[in-house]
Image 1 (spheres, rainbow, N blue to C red):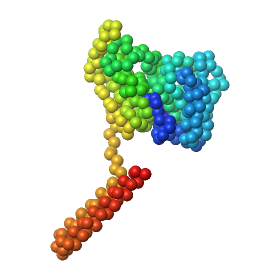
Image 2: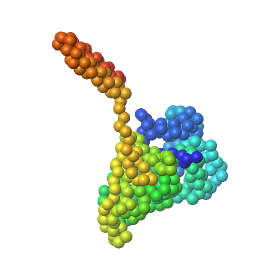
Image 3: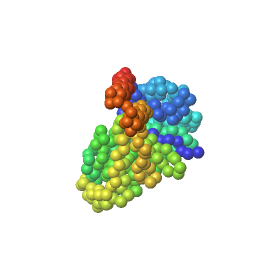
Image 4: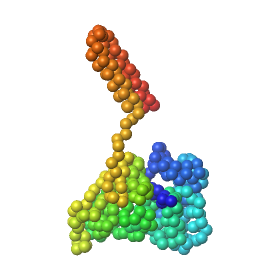
Length: 327
């Protein structure tokens, strides 16, 4: 059985209107049969944040929402709390303090249960802090800025659901380019993944490779440092770092990226069915006009009337579609 999907959400996902990301999470978790475990450990709000996600997930059709909230490593070893994950079809980790989340659950029976559930096909999603902890290496804390600087941020161990990677969130909104560049400069074997707000990187295992597709309003930025040149090993204190040769990918919604090959997946452009039908009708009209002209037995007045009817049909079709869009 392939591992379950990972949904890496950059934070501030829409919970009120279209709810694109959360709708996909509930659907992937089983829709009306979904049993979702919410882990709010990173959040200082705890019960309140569980209530929010409980309401959203149930409104989207989930059958059951179960809070799993360890506040210490001792609690993360509690057999009853770990058992609450059994039977879950989806696991959702909320935002907050990612270092707290890592310190409480990584290397505990609860953390191991999350990893095992993922391997067994369960969907694991997380927003903000819950996104960062999914990678093998995790941003613990650090400041904003576009220029990578020595000691700009600190790294901690994550759950390792996504191997050989480091994830950052609220990426564009909080100007976190520099700190992600700093991390990959110090560890060029890692792929840097920065996820914007209300955006998700959805990772699935397909044909012995990991594919990542992007949904939501923003973009996912990928930094591939495999061939970079850097002075991170000798830079002093907080001095700017040399980071040359990093391959940059900026992936908006609809993009797909092969994490195994570290390459963009080229996709065939899609055509709106209504546009295709309208184009086909116009082509049929033009072919008929061409036949009439070639036959030489149609008067100019007849041709003008036929062309006018064709234009009227096309305008009527376009106008009807625009009115439908407006509604």
